[in-house]
Length: 357
Image (tube, rainbow, N blue to C red; front, side, top):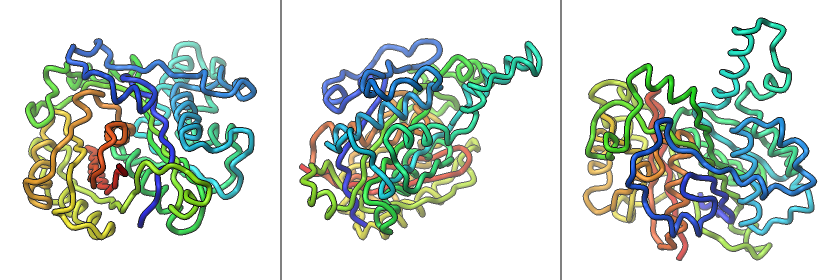
């Protein structure tokens, strides 16, 4: 596998472009009580496509803005629909949770007559993929993935599969999740809402997270297709694997399933362990950090540099691993990088990426 990334669209608490990510200073201050949030750049959506914005939920707005930013970065023409040879592969951990909460709260408080048809349309997690398809005229394969926290990285891998198998010439692939008061309240009730000072990757081991949000969408093409249209290539997806580790929700997670997934990703990418320069880790200051660290050292040894983007972005759920990849691309360093994403449900995704100099 060697699938080119020709465009990247980012919506994050640190900024909404690769340039902003590159110059953004790490946030050392504590996060607000409800976690981190983004200013969604709705102005990137063309004026003739904005008539539906008012009805969209926050997840749709995140995905739609990031998709337009990605299309612009890839220098694909906005004025023509992408058509049947273009597809979508999106991933989200929480999906339509915020919209569902709003929808059902009104019914509980006011009765069935208060059910909102507008909100109901967005009580399915695939609504965002549908809205992006409508806006950009995408008529090819369309998939929304649920792998918990690993959904975004898994969606990126599946999008690369679409290209590799010839099902599409262009795929918009990525992950997003929206933060809101409902999430902070739920985490607080469960004793899982943490401050930054309690969430040092590979340092703290307390259950819980600093909630955040964001969206990253990448434009994927075969390298041949990208060269034919003269596209700039940020880098290439070399391979990926999806696995399972049933102990991730326990007090002492095991590294076995993580290591097996990493090993299969290396084999699928035809990359040796000593060729990996860095690892974008899932680490966010919980017991799973130690299991991931043990798996990395067992499979890759001591050589790779470990990066922990959640120390900066917070826990952006399905967007987290892709925010780390976007940060890597923004840095402009040529290297072979493995990205890991884990979920307490047991899902594990490992992906190999080569950053072009």
